[in-house]
Image (cartoon, rainbow, N blue to C red; front, side, top):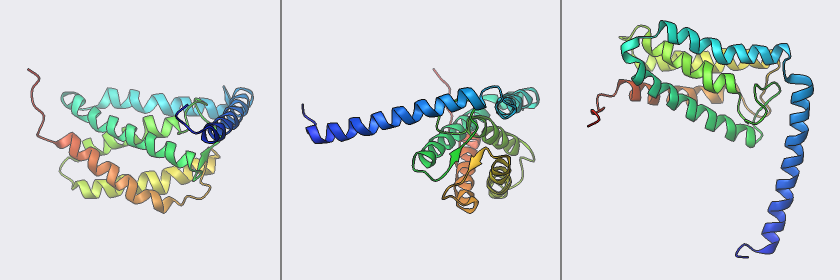
Length: 185
């Protein structure tokens, strides 16, 4: 074996510990979360924003807008997973117990809020829109989900999220408004 046996043993022990913790988490999810009102609330939050956006979107810009939404989803899910893994925050009610991030937040609410803010008042400065987006998600969204009991900021403060959300919005905005798309030949 190329890996030193001591490292393999430590890694295997940690892995087995994580598997047992995940199994316990899945049992709690199945017994106490699945089909509870909190689960249904998460389900609705994961579906309804996309349905509404699909109905009211600027149809000729759908593909460009979705690029920004997918960027927002990818970055949000990645950072959320890292933060959860590092113990900065946790979630008590999840739509699916297999994801370390909060599915409705990362894959629905944040990207759809991004899409709506990008489309409304297109002549407003992207900096102002990014400030609004960051404030909305960090100072309203996070406290709201903490109040509901879904989100537990263990060592995290909402203020830390402001610059992160600001940058996510600006990068997504630059993708959506880029003029560097070329035709597929």
